[in-house]
Length: 523
Image (tube, rainbow, N blue to C red; front, side):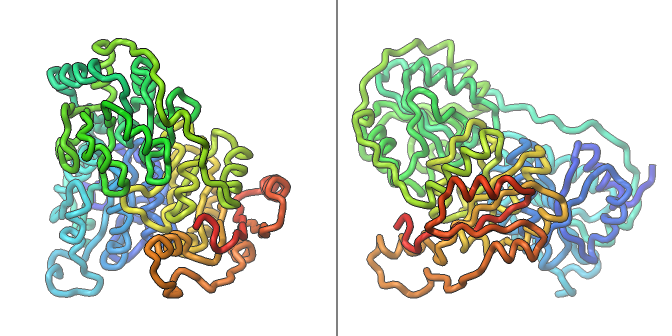
């Protein structure tokens, strides 16, 4: 049947089972919006394209399916780049669709013309320029296949505006269902031999565990090996916080994980990358600790640290085959078990702990980036990997609001946004999106009138204060929230947290709580 390119695009979204897309209109994509109006796909109009991309990410992280974001040419497309890069760094399935100027105007410095194809090549799994209506359906199907297969990530489809108004034949096809990559049995046997020789293994669990749904297999492996278990930011929730041997998030400030890395005789990495964020990895190199790495992306093997044995393939399938090959190990004593509890305690942490306890296990937590992100990662008790959403690899401030909105559309959850005044300033405009769509958000602004992480880094560097770490804003975020149609509450430094939070949560959502905390909290 002959249909316009715009209609084919919308049909293909329906074909792939897309329920929600996030975006912002513009001249080059008006034909798509005309077709969306009569489709089953619900378009969520955000306040900014970056917020739309973060919302599509939040949808993907919470649902496990590719999120979809739609933007117009020029600044609409460039405003997506941070969100696309964030999805790339954290292996989040995302399909970004951008309009562009018509084919005859490409290369002529036309109004709102941007080469978004080349601009996003380094931060996508794949990018495409569609030059005719008949190419749209194959491009969309390929985009979903690539975004959701193996190591997941973002795919960009750029479509010149005239292509939306061309006609081509369209025939519906079944939705793509990703097939996990089958691991190689010999690689698994080599890993099993190393595990059998070890006495003090440590499991390091990352986002690949979340993507493969391997939580039960990881728990069983930890039980059999009597292993210590630590997680990356992306792996939070893949192992229960009350599980045996759980050490928390691997970080430079977690003394128990640092101790375990000095003591272990085998480090088993399950769906996690060795990035530069943690100096603890240097301990593994220095001690020449044997290392097993299981990952769906061969490019991650030996990239930063040389492995002793590596398995390339889906983590759940690999563990299914590995578990029968490993015997139960006796429990051993670890030095970290004798370490005193040196966990940081400050008003920001107490706020986070109190909110998480009051909202319960069914809340989905999103964070922005800064000291509050560290506090949340170490202190939120999360039992599902889809309920803690944070920008791990890119570290994008402003992530939390959009991600929470997307997560709600994916699940219906109430979402807790943990943010700082610096991060909230970046994308607080998305509060209007939450209000008009009745999204039940609790936004906790840990307001120290400063960029806390920058102050901390300056102190560690013993560098003179430049003045940039103090915001000098004195914004009344509660009043700002009320002006946008949400509820707003201010909690002073001397207010009782239990009473203030109970009173605030008794009312309707969305809610912004402006928690005033001392400027040097956590520094």
